[in-house]
Image (cartoon, rainbow, N blue to C red):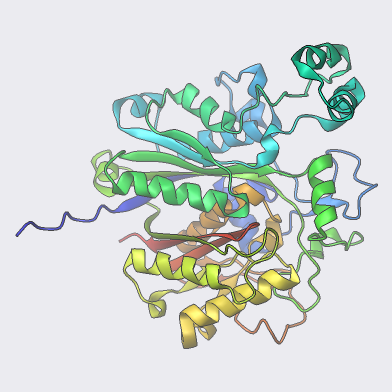
Length: 439
């Protein structure tokens, strides 16, 4: 009788961060432990016309310094893509890798990005007359479209969709490191980064690669992004005190703050990592995903998709609910999400739900959309590495419907060995990863 092949162990050997509370793992980890908010009034553009005027802008983001030596094409010299390249460079350096290592081994890249990566500078395009031509003429045709473009009216930083493909971040990183294996982007809203990490994990599990660069990058902190989420009425409007506006699981929560940044991880097959003497942060032990198939903007009221995602991740890791020590929640500070996620956790973990600390690092960095899952997993790993559970800040008044241990306001210094990180996106897309301390 044939033996079942031994399951591959996938480990995390490098991490790179660009976030509203710091660029680089040390800055990011120290701010998480201190419970520091990165949410403040928007400075990247004039947001005074919007109902929400604050967000988490990337702190300490200096791509010219970090990306010295990178060949960044003009068509990818865009803020979000520079964030992706910066986080990738930091992760590669953290893993002790060089460009030559990517050429010697079987490797690939799976990233996530937001759909806004194909939206050009709207104000510039409106000023050029493109919008009025395209939307007012029932049949503009390609010739009319070309004639409409007034190149002088387009700002220097405007990037056209035909050039700024949604996978430009992955392509530019792959081009720099000469990664010739698997290379693609995922666009699945707030679940995207965790799904990208899960897909990269599966590529190694299936023996298609020994090493994967994965994670996500995103920013909705620009005029159209803030406008769009204002229309959805999902953001907090506590403009007078932006640092305390985002209150996950609190009775007075009224929505999230947008954030921007990038998180990149290096995943490796464990024996491959050992063979090159790599430092191992943790083991990526399991992954699960689902979709609610319910509504475009609302999670299923009974949390069915969230439950299934967590259950599949636990089953994939071969662990039971009583073995989990910490949950990094999706925790968006919207009235529906926090209540439904709380209910889903209680249904999956039973009595253990009241024992397990649950926190939302979004309270400090905001909602980074397609980058969120990567930075939240990195927060979990940094906490595991350094013996602390990140807090849920701005928590002051308990909600009777959200009655778990949310690690309020102050990081908890404690060792933990097994954690899950949840990402539940618009459209009901759900993803969960399980991470375990390396021994």
